[in-house]
Image (cartoon, rainbow, N blue to C red):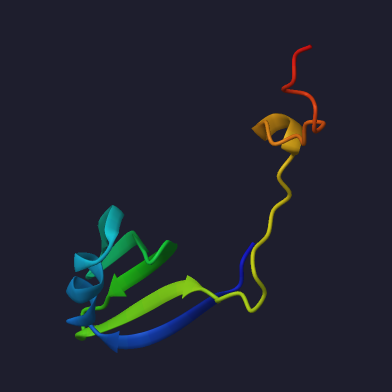
Length: 88
């Protein structure tokens, strides 16, 4: 699981975030509202609190580049011999 960071802000910040995001789900929980959305390619949560504050929760940015191994056999990127296209 990724480490999470959270910060507080004004509830007026939530609509600004949602304008540039894709809302996945929202729900009222008591006097608060929870928003689950994707912003800048990352999943985030925002909670509007009844006192006019907001709590924004997001994954901690990774300091190392994300890499994955690509299997050349599955992607068709296998190197062909130099004369493989020649038909004699």
